[in-house]
Amino acid sequence: MTAKILDGTATAKEIRAGLAERVEKLKTEKGITPRLSVILVGEDPASVTYTRMKKKACEAAGMLSDLIELPADSTQEQVKSVIAKLNADPTVHGIMVQHPVPSHLDELDILSTVAVEKDVDGISAMSLGKLVLGTADYVSCTPLGIVKLLERYEIPIKGAEVVVVGRSIILGKPVALALLERHATVTICHSRTQNLADVVRRADIVVAALGKAELIKGDWIKEGAVVVDAGYNKVEGRDKDVGDVEFEAAAERASWITPVPGGVGPMTIAMLLAQTVQGAEKYGQN
Image (cartoon, rainbow, N blue to C red; front, side):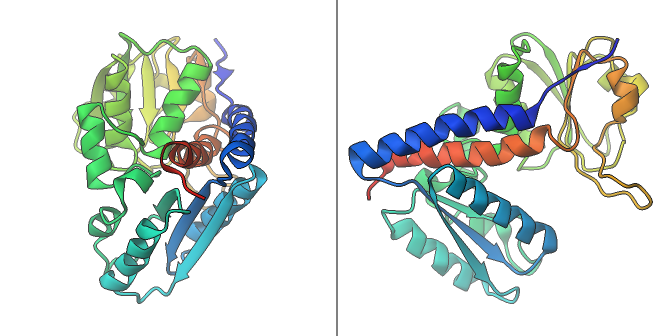
C-alpha cells in the first residue's frame, strides 16, 4: 500500500480563499476589517519567521495584522499591559502571544490575560476549559487544523480509535479533546508510556505531536491507518526537516499521511485567520 497525501497546503489555500470572501463581505456590509494582533517577546529566530508568515497571510486575505515586538527582558506586567490595551480596543478581533515566551515569564498567566472572545489561538485557561465543556468559541489552531484536514478528506473520525502521541497544552491535549468531541475513542501517549509501539499499532488514526524526529517507526503503523504528523524537527546532517514519523516507511502501510512540510503547518495559520474572521463576525466593531 502507498499512502495518499493529506495535502495541508492545498486545503489551507482553499480555506484562505473562502476567508477572503468573508473578509470582503464584512468590509462592504459592516465596514469591519478583521484585525489580528500578534505579540512577540524576544527575538527567537523561529518565532520571528512564524510571526512574519502570519502577518503576510493576513494581508493576503485582506485582513489587518499588527506585530507588536517586545524586548526579551520585558516583565510580566509589561506584557500583560500590552494585552490589556488590545483587549480594550474594539477594532482588534484576535490576539495571539507567540509561543514560546522567554523563560522568566509565566506563559500561562500571560495567555490567560487575553480576553476569551479574542483568544483566537485558543490556548488560554478559559478557552481550554471551554473545550473540555464542549462550548469553546476557539480551539488551539494546530489541533483545529488537524481536525479540518481530516474532515476535508472525509476521514471517518466517529468511532475511530485514535492514538495521540504528545500531551502539550497547545497540541496533544486539545487535539485529543477535539477528536473526543467528534466521538473518536482517544488514547494519549507521552514520554512515559509503556510499550508505545504496541499502542500505536492498534490506532486507526495516529496523531504524532511529541517533537522528536522520526520517533514513530513505519512498522508501528497499522495497515490502512491514517497518519497525521504534527512534528517539525531539524536533524543535523539532513538536508530537510523531518516529522515525528518515519515518513517513507509509514507511507508503505498507511492509507493517508501528512507530509512534512506541507501537511499540518499550513493548516495552523489558516485556522488562526479563520478564527480571527469568526471573531470579527461575532464581536466586530470598526
